[in-house]
Length: 200
Length: 318
View: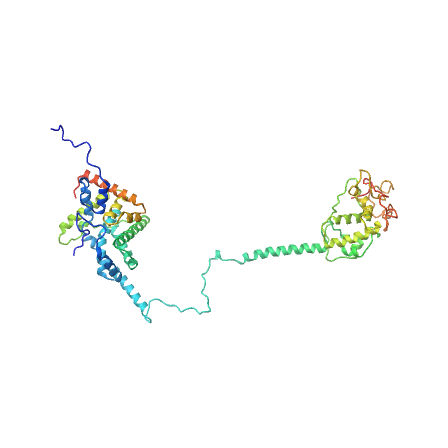
């Protein structure tokens, strides 16, 4: 069963992806069930990677891998609903990102080679996936033109599905400032899109 | 018919913040036209995952399985009573042994020097007290005269001896506890008009009244008693009148309570009116200058006051 990030293009539910089965899935994963944990991972990892690609363009995969290692180690101690689960996941990712940034600042390194998304082998339905991938990549590239704070807030609100209060706690800001940053980002997006004549 | 087809000057309507909140929440119904492209971009961000985004599943699942097995083994090993465990279990210490304390840093460790500081202060204070006591016992204090040692005073040696009586007394009864220090100066300062007490009586008077000016001590008390005894014999009485009458000439103004030039005390035998042996001069050890042990020559037999009054200017003094 293909797992979609969201149910549909017009009416998307950013807060509940797994839905009512989340509690059972969590309990099974904490008990050691591979399938349950795999389901949780497939549900959250794409959003996590997209968020990391916008805020940390170079080492998004490394940060994501470290984030999941931390999540696996702390999984038996986690308690909460799906919103709390996502908040915990992205908070861990943000902390890993800050640690990576400090480490890279002290020990700068350059990658030897890069594999672009176009070189990755694709399965059937690759054209549609590629179209969607292009749209996703274009959207992420468009967000990279925004200030860092605005882009991060939009990604956490839209892709991670976190509400304003949770994002405010993660960033250490007030909910009002988070809302203002998001609105400003969207207005700028509208300006960029209307001025560039980009169609997605 | 319109003159121009230009867009209205008011432009597109402003973006409502409620529309922005709706976009962020995922509500894409009734999106205003100016935000439709933004809505599409946000939708693209929420698109289905790609193959690349799901390629790292094997790695994380391996990590998950390893941890799950480790936890399962740990739980099962804990449940087993006699099973083999990887953790080394140390035997419990005997009840009599106390757990070893963590070693302290050298800088935090107390040294023995800290403990001896108050002891050193106490020792120094005790040593000082011993020294003071020894000095007090020895009698070597300011104002004390070597010739007026307690032994010599108690023995009742009179001043009728020669001028070397004091030295004789001193040599006759050597006090091993005494330490010979510099002779203390008397507290009574001589006035220019007074002659120094060169006679034995004068010396006794000076010593006695000087000792009265010092703080009481046991050694001084003995010497004072001796001096008092001798002076009483010389003065013919132990009351202050006789003593003043005897010693007055040697202290001059100090004993004068009347008008200037008048004195209520007997005059010194060697005052200006009596002889030319030396008015205020020094007569060390002359037999003639030494008063009789019972009474001075100027003193009347009845000892009535006011009969002889030494003058301040003529009487020898200090």
